[in-house]
Amino acid sequence: MGKNKAISIGINNYEFLTPLKYAKRDAELMQDFFRNQAGFEQVLFLSDDSLPDTKGNLIRPSFSHLRNLLLTKFEKPFMGDGDNFWFFFSGHGRRDNGRDYLMACDSNPNDIESTGITINFLTERLRRCGADNVILILDACRDRGSKSGEGIGNQAAQVAREKGVVTFFSCSPNQLSYEIDALKQGIFTKALLEGLSSPECATVGQLNDYLSSRVPKLIWEYKGNEVQQTPITIAEPDTKSHLIILPQHANRDDIYALKVDAFQAEVDKNFELAEQLWIRVFAASFGKDMSAIQAIKRIDRLQRENQASSQDNSVSASVAKQAESPLSPKSKLVTDTTPIEPDVPLKSERGIDYTKLRDLLAAGKWKEADEETARVMLKVAGREKEGWLDSSSIDNFPCEDLRTIDQLWVKYSNGRFGFSVQKRIYQSLGGTRQYDSKIWEAFGDRVGWRVNKSWLGYDELKFNTQAPAEGHLPSWGGWWCGGWVGLFSRVETCKV
Image (cartoon, rainbow, N blue to C red; front, side, top):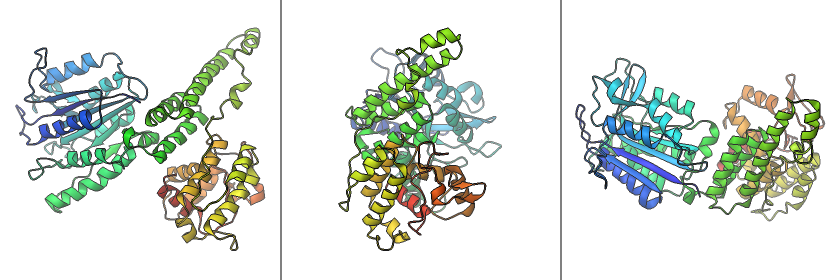
């Protein structure tokens, strides 16, 4: 299981800024969660009235101490792939000359550049810890005094995107992050702790969904409709939204989504990302997923072979020939990329036997497998006589069966085919539940169902792994009228 370490900072009393009531309490509650509920290995807590540590060192979050902490503690890596480093800050934030700052307890608003901690500096130092996932949580009040009328968030969000740091903001730019006397804490942190404690919030995306819904409800409950507070989350690239940040809450669907991302990274030959994702699959399964171990070994071998292949291209023919010995077999580069997964459980809520579909896919008989997919889906829905699925059939299609069919396609196509692959492509083009002809045509172009502005007939499709594009199969063979748009919505609902 990956390591988790954290810093939690809460500042009530500022030397040059308006005091806050519950920032310290918010940080204390976060510290308690990190230590006692999540079981983090190490948590550093800092507040404006912190007592000296066991060595007599002051640990107040002053500018000089925070800067020194970031410079010294984060000079060399002390974590690795599969690990998470969390940084929580509750206090004031300011925007000055287009740059976002966190305000230390002695930061001077008249000299922000010299006394504030820039988001650039903070993220650059935190990334040095070595963890492949840094989580930044900023519950900072917004500054409405700037000439531009903008609070922190815009520049910080851009930095988060550039650095690949998952960042949760307590509110959007130009808004305030509210403290509530009745709660004796900030609204955002209350919602955050609820989400982190919920078994439904194992991933970055799930926590974001919870915060996006819960914070506005709390604002309405305690502040009415006079104010707004809308939290935002930056998680880029898109695979970051599937990252499991709380393995104790993760279920099979969460781990499967991460596996799909890992497979796709392998297909794209992004071996560094693929390895990171497989390590996270291993951590989320608490070391029980043997396919993750096999994948990590496979990727390591592929990286070495790929490096050897690159070197072969730059040396003489005689050296290249020597490099093609059994110790570095170029001929295996293609065949060895097929992920070695344990058998997909052939589960069905309707008692359907998926053995034939599995065997056809395993044998690479793609057209027969496509036809078998249509047959079993019609049987599941009880619409064999009609020969097509209507919207109601799609909306109520059993999730377990949909997941089994998709997993079989994803596995035996090396992540190239499957409903989940098609859904991802469709959504990347801006597709939603509402039909849009332009988006649908763009999707057809992308998966190779449409060529030169003309839709292909069923017999014109490519039933092999050399299909022109990922997502080419399963096909649109005309066996339902409810539409792929409805199917993609069902795939999303079932978390396939």
